[in-house]
Image (cartoon, rainbow, N blue to C red; front, side, top):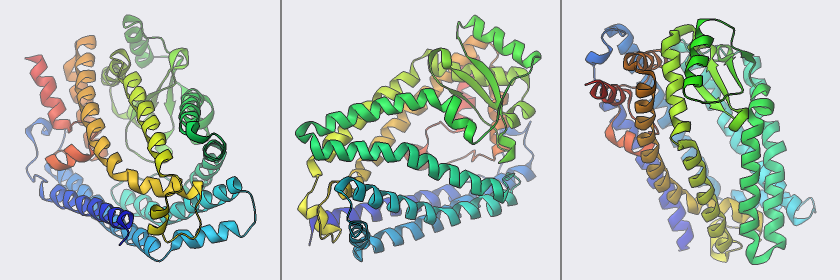
Length: 412
């Protein structure tokens, strides 16, 4: 039997089995008793509702994972990739254009498979628990915009990768690495002024107490920003969030309008201080550097598996091609990606503690950060007692109870 076929199917099934195990443990680890840290902000009835939300979302993820796994394995076993390849070749275009048709169609099929799950999640689950504010019109427009952006940004990137591997020989992976890195950095600068406004409206924060507190804080920290904005996230969801976008003098602070509504000015400053900590402690630069190095490793490994006969036999392909090699390599790399994800999540959780510490020390108001974390968790119905295996495998942030207890320890 083809060793690549055995490895790929085993990796898919192992990944699926691990997902199911984590989902079961997540539901079993739900504590019926409200943690004492949340008794001042959460009543037992709302806490029970948040746990029900976790159960529903977890069970839905099991159904989705099961269907996607079955379809993926069936597509491999019954030669779906070969049929798609023969169809793409039937147009008689060049190798690169054929590759764009092959990969583009595959992406479209994945997107079509995802739409029913997104619809159910948004208009059934999120609606049931009071989160959803998305209209069907907004959902359709978001889907169309995402598709167009994928074509406009992803299309040229795929074209460049295929061109390099067709014409640059042994050094193709280096050219791909450099090109994708440059494009990624450019997108980071374009996102706040070109890409994000396609989906949301950004409004400069109005003058008042909140803006004054924010400006006083960033001046004390000598942290230059381009502007402070609110984003109309309430047109899609009631959940709270905030983020930085851009680099250098293009850096912007963006608050969800729902967050501005629910948190006090001092609590919002505490959230801002946490995000400032990520920048001051070089977490963003470190994460980007790691991503760039990882990208180089991926392209180098990809170059080894280009037009591998055994790999193509595993997918029942009649023709070798560079474009199909990109897709098949993703199946091989996925187990490595999962292992790296565990490592990166561990580093990210460490960074979150460091940013919390920075926020507490730079504001000298630990209770504001604690209250902000509580309100974020309560409003978003976060799972307060996740299973340790789930945290180890999937959490980029420490569980909120651990963060609160860490801050309390700092106060002592």
